[in-house]
Length: 82
Image (cartoon, rainbow, N blue to C red; front, side):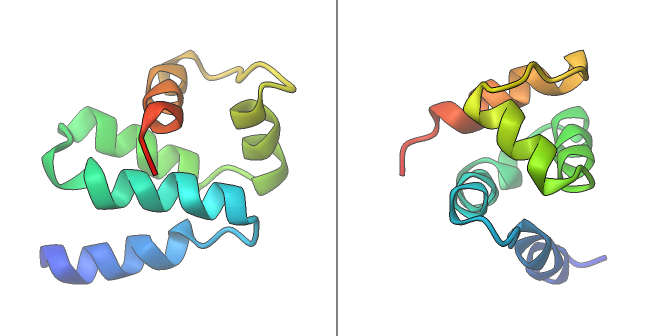
């Protein structure tokens, strides 16, 4: 799949209905996706498949993420500057 088509599809998937999650995922897509290694991209896609309410609790620290492989990327996303 061409990269620009993939980016458009991912941008649509990043629209979560919660502004905070939209911004977090959009920031990663804008600043990190193009240079991210395959494994990190796979974790990002995994996060996009998770339910919004769980993502919200994990990112806001209300609940620990039970998926250890996703935690480093979540921390990276949270550290990205707006």
